[in-house]
Every structure is written in C-alpha cells, then in structure tokens.
Image: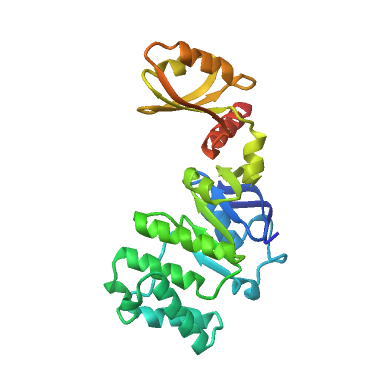
Length: 303
C-alpha cells in the first residue's frame, strides 16, 4: 500500500474527529476520501502528512512511517489555499521547484511548461495578488505538482472552481494518474467522486462506513436501484410499500427497492399507472450516495 492507516484515533478535547480509522491506498489509484463536512476527512489527511499526530494507531506512507524523504515524494493541495501574494508568479514557482531539489534548468523548464499547459505564460512576471481567483487556483495547482510527486493529496480540490477551471483540474489529475501518480482526494461531492475514483473510503463522524475498490463496493450492494425516464405523474412511487426510497424530478425518478424485491413488480405498476409514458426503465448498481445513506441509517439503527 502507498498509504496504510491502521486503527487511528484523533481527539480534540472530548471530541473524536477520527475514531478507529482504517484505510489502505493501493499504488496507482485515484482514491476518494468521501463524506459530509465534519466527517474527519481533513483531519485524516493532515495525519497522513504528519501535520497532526494520531493519538492512537499507526500510519505508513510508502511502506514506512513518514519521514523527510517521503515528504519530497508527496504533493499536497490544502482546502485552505494560500500563496505568497507579493511574489511574482515565476519567482514563486521557481522557489517551490528548487525547494523540492530541482536544479535551476529543470525547474525553469517545468515552470514554463506548466504555465503553458494552464494557458498562463503571460502572468509569469505579475505578482500573485494581481491575479484573478481562478488564475491563483491554477498557480496553486502548479506549485503542488512541479516536482512530479508520486503521491498527490488534494483536500476538497474542486471547491469554488468555475466550470472551466474545474474541467482543467480534472484533466490534469487524470493526466498525472495515467503517468502512474497515486491520487488521494477528499470531497463531500459523491457524484463527482464516482466519476473519477477507482477506490473509495466513505466516512461519517470519524468512522469508516465502507472502503475498497469502487466496482466491488457497488457490486456488493446488488442492483436494487432503478432509473426511470417518464412523462406523467410519478408521486405514487413514494407510496409503494416495496420502495425504500424514491427521488423525483420533473421527468425522471431514481427508485431504490426494499431488499429482495424484484424490479418486475415496479415495472408492472408503472405500466398500469394512468397518464404515464415510460421512455426508459433501467436497473443499475446503487450510487455512492445511496450506499452511504443505507449504511449510515443501518449504523444509527444498530446504535
């Protein structure tokens, strides 16, 4: 494992921000650390990076407890971002590149190359404070990846991004992943993570809800979700006794059946519904959001 977190607990006063955390990040994956705000994602990341020390348990990075050599193999983009605002962009990026051990020539080539990649070569001589928020976000990203880290850790990387920069950041993450970089990113947006990740760890209130390969996680929960594209009244879906949950939209519904229920019964009820035209009826694996809700509800009932 690139990162191994074993039985880790972290307390602030009487509050456990992380309580018995267990996660393993295989090499070469895009790993999503997912959960609502306050779930313990940032605290977990800061312990992996050695910013916080766990009260209990152990964390290995690259097979060993974190040391300075391991830190040089990591790129970290925090949620609370900040740059030296009075520095000129090129000077700032050269500083970060040289601090990671790159020589003058190699550092200059990478700085110039990344500024071209994000379409900002014209701001190289400007001060950071002169840039728009979107430009500063791009410069922050470059500063994180200049040294070509083997492990890239991103805390809520998509927060506050406009659509263009959001797509650019996704493209760059995928490029780095395709070159062999292991990526860990935290987010509360499970739909976004579902599109990008191949391994996930869902956490809630400092505890792991479910963890592992995304495909295996979804397969283990069966195919009890139904996507319905239809015109007409769909409110009746919420009243069916074999439906666990129905999310209704203008011309669309996502239905989750009770355990053991066959989708054929739902289709029959849809066909019999007056004034309803069905365009699509598809049985699919549950979404991460559905899995999270199911597990959290199950845990609360057990407690």
